[in-house]
Image (cartoon, rainbow, N blue to C red; front, side):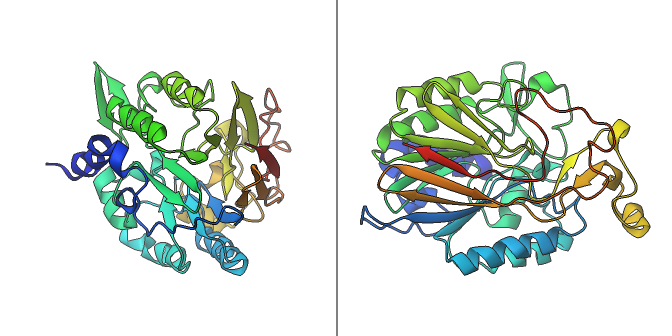
Length: 335
């Protein structure tokens, strides 16, 4: 049996009985039954080690801050690094945080690898899973599937680069597991995904199915958190909060707004796509805290563009508040 099928069947076949155990988590689930304890965790997404020249230093900054704050766990929400030997030093930086660490698969993590190869490289036993931490429940989803001719196909080796209509799906097996897992927990729950579960243009294609499941249990849902779009944005829909976490590193620019003035000539020679990178001067990340009073606070880092900014290059503002920026906002959510 293929490794992915085996590990994911753990989630499907035993969802009701295992959803709250460490079998669905790849780091020890720490239980704390004291309801007055505030849970703190660090969030980072879209580091893009393979595109960003100073990705190591950016990740080091986040890890240092997580250690200083003594957070309970950290999570990265995808587009982290490819499974290549040259990225082992990058992973060593991640491993410097000695507490529990969680991964989410991003679409670009499979640009040169299969899911199985990325899982092995990261030390991540499952592509989707859930875990309990303190008094709270966390669900991690994998939206990296193509859907063609009635079949769900794993992203691998850059097969993501196809017609947009057939990519960014969550497979039916996982949806059934998600439904069972959410029904089985009585704890306030956060749902993590790389791609958005609400975004009408850049989100999961079969997101309405997921939304309907969550809306039946909206009293349990604290919020949904995603990366992928390199946006700083909050959306409230049918009783559920969806928060877009900005990339740690940059915004991708089309040829019309690209530049070869933000980095050194040597780096442009080394990184072939660097002219598309509108980088942030400082690494972006966030820290979240949840308390028993029903409040979740997100504290984000604010930075500036490496000059010239996309807007200096003539890029228009986004619509509906979705404006590219070099920051992650602060949020306070009630649940």
